[in-house]
Image (cartoon, rainbow, N blue to C red; front, side, top):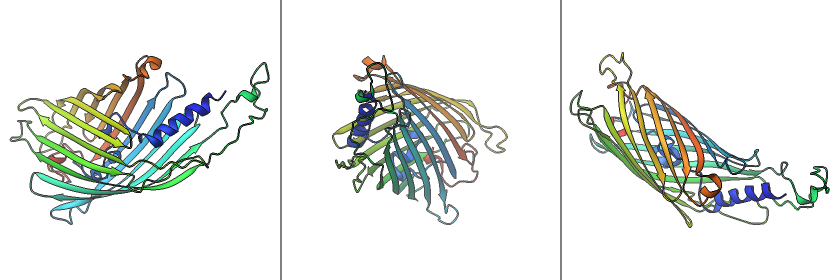
Length: 348
C-alpha cells in the first residue's frame, strides 16, 4: 500500500507550499511569531517547552516539540533600552518518524524605551532547517505475495528523495505600551503589544525531492495582544489576535482569556507568591476552536489547550483535533515589585 507515502507527501507538500508550523497558544512561544519579541517580557530570563499533537484520530499522529529560551541583556549598561537574545528549536514528526522537519533559530533584538509608557523593538533571526523522509516503514502493492505482506519483496518503486538542509532569515518590529496600577490595590494595570514580522526573506529551498524544486513562500505575520486589569477586582482580560499570510494561504486567529488572581504577591517582602488561573479559548477562522486554561504561580506557568476541528476534516476526525501543552519559566519572578528587571509593566 502507498498510503503512508501519500500521507507523508501530502503533509510535506502542505507544510512547504502553504504554511509553516503553528501553535494554538502562539503567545506562549512568541519568537515563532515575531523575532522582535526576543527578550520582550517582564523578567530577565525566560524558557518555554511546548508539545502539540494533531490528527491522531485519522491516522498516524503529527507531533511537534518546541523549546524556546531568551533573555534581556545590557539592562544595566543602557539607560534607554537593552538587547534581547534567544534561541528556538522545534521538531515535527509525522507517523513513526516517517517525515521529520527540524529547525534551529537564533534571535537578536534591540529594545528602546521611547518614554515611560512606550517601547519599540526591532528583531532579526537566522535559522538552520532540515526536512527528511524515512521510507523504511512504507508498504507497497508489489510486496503483497497474494496472502500477506512480505517486506523482503522488492517495492519496484523509484526513490528520488533526499534529506534537505537550508538556511533561513527573518525580521520583525514590535511596539509595546503599558501603565501600572494607579494604586497598590487597584489592580487596574493595562498593557498592549502589536507587531509585524516577515519570515523567509530569502525564500529557501526546502524540497526533499531530488527532481522537483519548491521554495518556501515568504510569510507575513501581524499580531496584537493586551492585558486589561479590571479596576478593584482580581480579574483581568487578555485578548489577542494573529494573522499569517503565506503565499496563497491565510490564517486568522483570535483568543481571549479571563484571568483570576487567586493570591496576590506581597509587594514589599515577596514572602507570598502570586497565583492566578486563566480560562478562555482560541479560534482559528474556518479551522478549529480550542478551549484553554493556564495556571501561574510566581515565575512558573502551565497552559493546556485542545483543538476541536471545525473544517472539512471534521468529518473524518469527528471534531477531534489534538492537545497542546506548554510550560514556561520566567526569572526573576515577574510579579515581585521592583526586583531585578528594567522591563516595566509595559511588557506584562
